Length: 459
Ligand code: ZN
Ligand code: ZN
Image 1 (cartoon, rainbow, N blue to C red):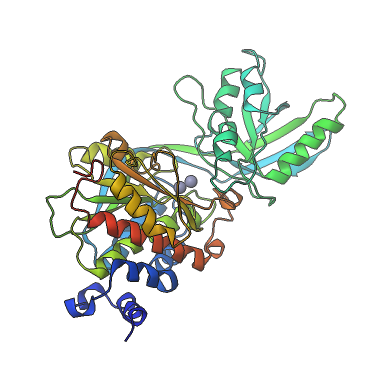
Image 2: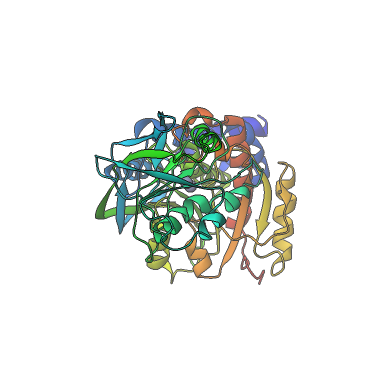
């Protein structure tokens, strides 16, 4: 029986049935086998998107998602599985999401509210639209200049492998509504922060901070935004009037939770390896790419490492609640566990496409380990980057502890075609790329969980 046959058997058996004689395989052989045979990650993301679907933060649907994840982790043999509760302020999208141009070119446009948007009331708001090509143009508008108006904010976002254009285009969503409110606008619509050509708005959180009154804020699909921009070109100075109806609601304080589970290590006195994702999603898709896949990937990696043999360090999986509406779970986890030292933190929250780059924040402080990991992932086509890893949204605890962090960068070329849209569904996940992801994670988590020395210092 060759190694890949053994792997096949290992992958199809529950943990409890594996005995020592069944585990002669190396971590490398397990990671290689995972490349063609992982079923855990797919099972997780297929299961939660099918049996639960959308998991809007702080709602009953997210609670069902957490319950589902708890049962799944327990069924796979994770120990110390908990749903650690925390309070949050909960926003829900409401039922009515409509935009129409009243004049001079009457027609409907496709819109959805941004997370944190105020309500127009069921009667809607009708007002003149003022066009801003960029957030900086909006920022330059004088105080009071938008009184009674709807601000429209555009941007130009292109596809990139590293997703870096999100940082460039994202402010239209993150702060556009706040800036418009401060200048007197009654509402804001933005060109969706995305790269597709479908009639799907991209939602996502917008932040009014403490210095702006929340106003209704929506995202137009990219084709509808382009249509609106053409109207400005053809209006010859005539005002463009829009009727906008969005009816989101603030529900006040509700409960969410962080789902955790462990593969307990041989030496529980050593700080654990923390691998994270988030369990919530926006209401408009089923949260497959963002972030059901991420939760499937990290949990699958932990299981594959366990199949090679009990790791030295505990591997703790954190499926954070309520990431999308303000990192509530990540903050609550850090607050609750700040005194418990984490050896190293990693997160998966960038879809399900292949991993192409590895980075750490200990390349200089522990070059031996950094190089060992770089060599180990090279065979999967993963390069070693030269930047300092900063970690994803759900590992606030690693940043708060100033601990070791690794980033496994995923191909983001099509991520922003799907991000926060109704198109974020299971069929977009490519099982081959998903397994490459799990293979790289298995390799990296396996090295970290069996590293006796301090990850950050090598001592
Ligand atoms: Zn996410
Ligand atoms: Zn997201």
